[in-house]
Length: 117
Image (cartoon, rainbow, N blue to C red; front, side, top):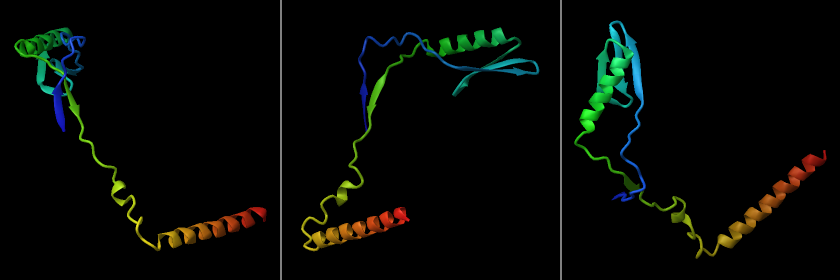
C-alpha cells in the first residue's frame, strides 16, 4: 500500500468540523469531541462546556498542520484467475464439456416435461 501527499490548493483545510457529544451530568455538562476522548471538558453550563472544548481544540491545533494524504490500495489478482486455462492442454476436456452439455439438455427436457403437466 502506498501513501502520497496530496498537493491541492483547492482544498480548504483552514476549517475543521467535528462532532461533539454533550452530556448532562449531575453537576453540569461534559463535552467530548466524538471519537477523540482526549478532547473532553466539564463545565457548569452547556455553553461553557462547548466554549471550553472549543478553546481546548484550538490550543491543541495551534502549532500543528493538517494535511491530506492519498492512500492507494494494493492491486491484487482476482482469486479465480489462477484457475483460468488450467485445462487448456487436457485432451479429455472436450469430452467433459460435451458430457456437461448433454446432461444440461437432459435436465432441461425433464423441466419442460414437468411444466407441461
